[in-house]
Length: 306
Image (cartoon, rainbow, N blue to C red; front, side):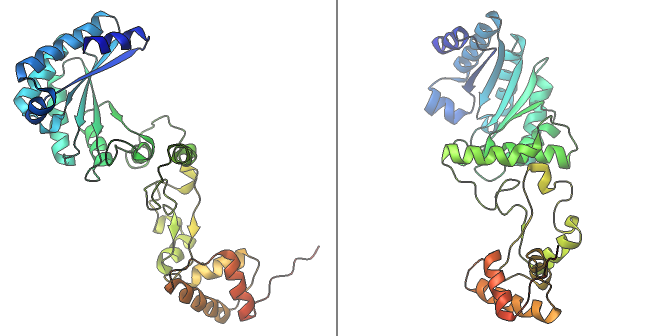
């Protein structure tokens, strides 16, 4: 809408992002416009931004449900009148990484001098994977949100995308990754939207280990059951050995020794049985409760002498 573009320009922003639906279902039942009308309005909107001297980003909304020939026609038309960016939105989150890669490669091939940006939704849990697929296909940028907060099931998560680029793709994003968990907690508290415990990178269980074989492995070498390329310290988190029904003797011994006890093998086994019994009742055993078990078994703390 002209008045919306003008209001944005008058506010002094450096970039104006304009968009128009391009899928037939949205053109018919949301935009109430024909393909020809949508293309004309898209070109006019881009020209308005470019003529004002602002950076322009254009999105063919619902690109992943748009017929390819029409999508490329729109991309070529707005590129010819000078848009700086073409944003490719998977508006309804229906693309698979392979399909999204194909769409982005097609757009890159028809975008002229414009850079390509991607915007992915998480309706099927594929937003971050699709953002990464977009990069692989030639996109220069991805739109992400902290904790994945966004419309419906959300968008590509900032923390997941950043750490995948940093650790899996070996890309220097320039992000101070050590503060990622801090940022996630801040947004969680401010937004009122809880971060699931099993959320990748910033969930409270992201670096927690309960299974006996897992815990024993990470005690010996963290690379055994953690990605290795992403450590807790890299994102400002800490590793936790959770005590419950899956806990093994290695975790129990480690926790007892951290608490100042020096148990025998038999004492460790006795405490481990108590931990498993409590865990079977869906209880998580705290360090204080572990100390109680140690005293019940008769384990003495190591005396510290000056």
